[in-house]
Amino acid sequence: MLKIALTGASGLVGSRIIEILKDRFDFIPVSQDRMDITNKDQVEKNLSNLEFDIFLHLAAYTDVDGAEKEKTAAYVINVKGTENVFKTVKKLGKKFIYVSTDFVFDGQKPPYFEDSQPNPISYYGLTKYEGERIVRDQAMIVRFSYPYRARFDQKKDFVRTIKTFLEQQKSLTMVNDSLMTPTFIDDIAESFGHLFLNFSPKIYHIVGQDSMSPFQAARKIAETFNLDSRLISSISYDKYFKNKAKRPKLADMKSKKNDFFSMKTFSQGLKILSQSSMI
Image (cartoon, rainbow, N blue to C red; front, side):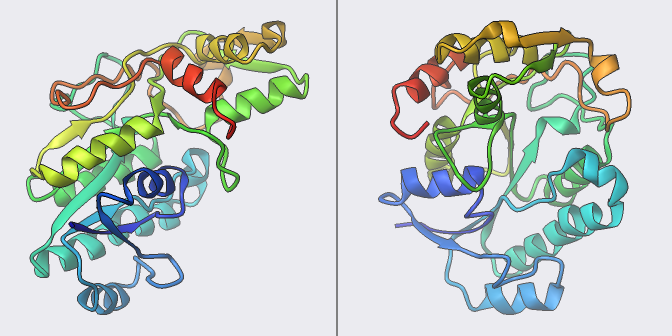
């Protein structure tokens, strides 16, 4: 059984990967308490004492707006932290998987495939792209976009956030002229099941089948869970993000390389959630 060491094991995506694949792989969570990725000596000491085949690096500074104000923290975690872990893993002769994001693109010329040229427009996106540049051609890079899943109390994804607002009869204002690509986390987990067994130092987009505006996504959520869509109003991208960090406006993510797992549409993913007791 392959041994997978990973950061971010208690997060939204990492915890679900372990839940779904725990009978197929031996997971070794490396928590922040155990190893500070920004401390090179600590990383080398910890990983040298671990027996693993692949290192999956999920941990990151992900607050897009916060990164504009806390640039040092975002850089140290996303760039130096990635470099520390990657170099140590390579020194040990092991395989490395770096998780990235649609935020490495500018959102001006969709769709975006694995070979599309990154051009980040936010500091968060810049740090994630710098991480890609450190590991590229020597590690696997997996990008995904707007992940959502069944209930996870530690952190809400965008589906749970919107659903909760509507359940509480709170109004929502959603952007109607941008694109996002919602991705069902269970599909991400199953895709990793294939990627672990078929490691190759390439870039993969593991993303949902369809893209839509946040406004359309919110209405789909309301429809699926029988909530009041009249609470949802629309706004333009330029107005909504006027005083916020820039996001890729048309983040229509596609894959040329995922021929091994059929990703769900947003409607299919929501239907599964609506039938789950854990939503």
